Image 1 (spheres, helix red, strand yellow):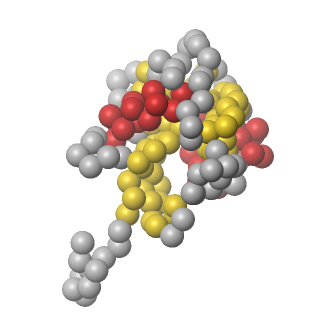
Image 2 (image 1 turned 180 degrees about the vertical axis):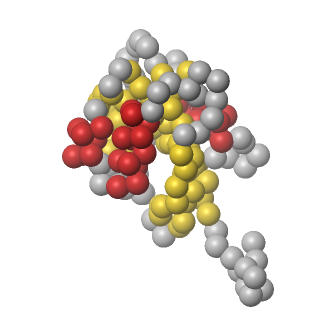
Length: 145
């Protein structure tokens, strides 16, 4: 990408985050200590959008890969924001999903999981924009479109 000045433009990582809801809680995951970015940090299900992949398809894939749950993903994202991943700028597209039953299984990306309220997550998570998105995900009425 070139900037208006003719030089190299910004490089963005595109990612999705999925807030899997059950009642007034969502599934939070703690990143494995072996991860290169934010080891030990609490987050929601998340991952990069693959080349050629639509964001909602990435949300469905990541929810399945990282939790093993049957998750019904809303048809549209409810918010998006810019943040950093290590030194790279990242655009995050946020979805809500629901999983009514089953136990989450951990992938190699996480070492713990918990169903958290927004306040519990705010105390555990060190990413303010993610906490803000979690609060919004839990406060919104269900998207039935």
